[in-house]
Structures are given as structure tokens and as C-alpha cells.
Image (cartoon, rainbow, N blue to C red; front, side, top):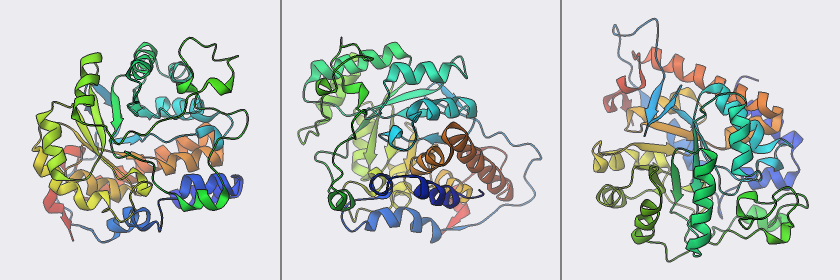
Length: 356
């Protein structure tokens, strides 16, 4: 398999149709879902010449966490729907690739087990933890403590989900819960025996329309780890993020799964990068399928990008090896595009190298 599309085709053959639709689908008419990818096709690269290097260095460091490349694993839920090894396989592949895995709070494997699997491959893996702040702040703090104890290096708070988006594929498939034997393991009541606990004691993730900057301040007061916010599309929210002292932002529309008809993330990135002005790292997810997509995002102001669905397709197609193949495919594709644009390091890319 040579492209992300090849892995998606293989995954579609292996997955239960309802589970494929869960991973592949978006909100309502899926306009934003499609735009996340097609927006890159409207951008043209303008390479520089006679300034490249035979040896390129793709490595970066984000908030104290090193990564071998500016391509991270974005948080996605329910990996055990895609493969029996689930998040364990993904974590091992991420550790092997030397990149950061942002573990979803809605993972079907507990954060302690994910971290242990990653450490089988690398002694100090780059794990971050995606968090939905729950109305029950005591329970939220307990999750934070679990993640800290497991060794995560940052928290990424999803802020674009005051309510759950309507995903009509899931409605048509009547897919609204995990099958028997699977659960959101990070939401087991603290103190339960995870290996023998009753699934009925697993809490539901509660979306909170009342989430505000005070909640971000509360989390920052409870942890010494960096706190990023994920789901920023408006430049004024990016300015507020700087004002409120968050460590970084993720330009994201939840993979087109929340509010349909919002812009593609690459289309709002330049304005957000300008608003931030280098005061904190800017990450982007949504629609990354090629190395040229990565180049365009970095040139327009992102410090790194996250990939979600491509990782799930690799997982479904081939478990840990499938995820590894996807990550190495994207690495090689990015390295080639960077060389052709005259760059030696991701920081060499500049906005003037992208035309609309």
C-alpha cells in the first residue's frame, strides 16, 4: 500500500460497516468533513531552489516533548473497534516512530496500559492526554491524576463540544454505544479493579455547554503539565488563549464531526497563526493525507500537525504494523516534499511558499 487512501480501502473491507461509518463519518451533510481534505487541493506550493541539503532533520520539540517529525497522532476514540489490540498497538507504533501520541479520554484501553505498552518500545514515550472537562470536577481531577501517574507530558482539552454533533451515519446504523466487552476504560470510577470491574460502573462522557475560561484556569491550577486547548477556529479565541496562559492551541474542527459547514482548518490557520504571533505553539489537525499537506500547514503557521483517521485505517488494516506503515509513509512523503521545497528543517518553510 502506497497511500493513505490504500489503507482506508483495506480498512473498509475489514471493518464492520457501522464501525467504518463511525470512524469515517462527519456531522450532518459532511460538508466540513470533505472540505478538510479538498481545501489542500486549492493550495499550490512555490518551492525555493539552491538552498537545500542532502540531509534533512525532521525532528521538533513541543512543550518539552521531542518528536522525530512534526506529524503527531491526533486523539481518536475506540481503537479496539478497529483492531483487537486497539490503543496498545497504536501506542507501540507511535513509540517506534518516535512521535507524540495524544491519547483520547474515550480510549477503549486505560491510560496506564497504553503508557506501559509504549514503554515496551521506548523508555520515555511522548504521550499527551486529551481531556473533556467533566461537570464533576472531582472526577475530572481523578482522571488528571491517573494520567499524570501514567507519565503523560501534556493535557489537550477539547473545547469545541458544548453538545455532541449529530452524525447521521451513526443514526442510520443505530450505532450509539460500544459493543459488549468494550468500554471507555478511562471513565471507570477511580478505585475500581479495571480488570474485573463491572462495565455498568463506567461513566458516560458528559458534554458541557457551560465550559468557559474559568474551567481552563481551574485545570491549570491542578496540574504542572502544559495545558493546550483543541478546537480553535476563530482568531479572537486564539488571542484569548494567549491572554489566559494556555500552553498551546490545536486548530481543529473535530474532523468535521461537530458543527457542519465550519471552515476547513487549513483555511483559518493563517489568521490564527497571525493572532498568536509566535507566543505559543499552534498545532493543526483535519484532512492531512499527504506530505504536501504537512508542508502547506507548516508553511502557513502550524508547528506540527495531527493525523487521526489515517492512523485508524492503518490500525484496522494491519494492527501495530499498519500504524507504523502509515506513519512512515507520511514521514517519507513529507521528507520528499520538504526537500523539493528547498528546506532542511520544518522551520525553513514560510508562508510565501503557498499560493491560493
